Structures are given as C-alpha cells and as structure tokens.
Image 1 (cartoon, rainbow, N blue to C red):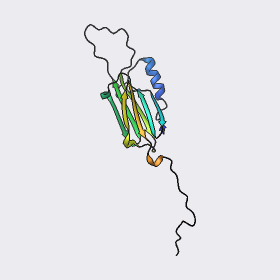
Image 2: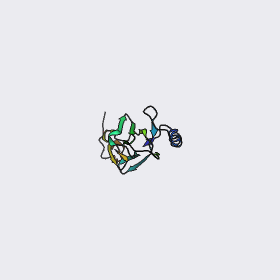
Image 3: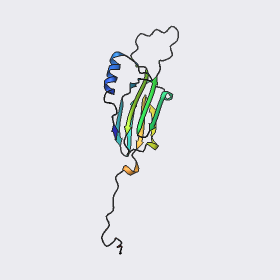
Image 4: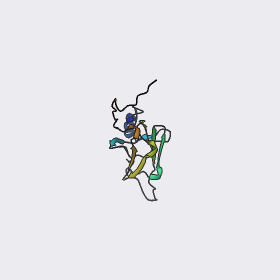
Length: 144
C-alpha cells in the first residue's frame, strides 16, 4: 500500500537530531510516522507534538501524499531566559506514495494530542469479491 520515496530521509533525520539543526521550507526535517491497515481503511499517523492544526498542510496530487507542518517558537515575554531548548522547531515534511488501491478522494484527517491521523479507505475496486461460476446449461448459445 505504501512505497518509500527516499531511502536517505531517515539518515537525514538522525543527522538533524544530532546536529540540532531545524528544518526550513527548502529543506524540511522528517516527521516520524506509522502506517497500517485497519479493516478496509489504511491509516497513517504522523507525530507533530506542539504544532498548531492551522500550521499543518495536507496535499494529494495523483498518488503522492504530502504533509507539511511548522513548529514555531513559543512566544517569549520580557524577563524570560531560556535555560534549555531541545524541542526541534522549524518545518517538517513527509511524502508518501500511495497505492492505486486507495481512495484518495475520501481521506479523513484528525489531529489529537500531537498526532495527525489520516484514514484512507481502500477503493471498492481493490476489495476482494466473489465471482459466480456459471454452468454450461445456464449459458446462452449463439448460433451463426
């Protein structure tokens, strides 16, 4: 159902974590995700803690799903001195190639507790179905 589009993204994510660099719109950081099938629905969950729902952008073009989000620094007031800042800020993005068997016209998105969950139904044409077997006597004969 899912194809990875860039095998080096995980390596980039680890390097960004170790170096402390933030993602930008031209070179976004990778967001962690889980993907699984649940009955007749394909579910993809993205970790986006601290991101406002208004800062999340979800697009589908053909079979390419793109999720982008931006985590901005919290508003600081006068007299506040930052002692430690480990939570990554900046732009996060993930592209996922969806299979033709998914119904991209009916994707549902929910955001709860810092997790963006997309539910993509399996297309009717991709669901298993029974094929009736006809008998020789039940078929219509065509004579020439």
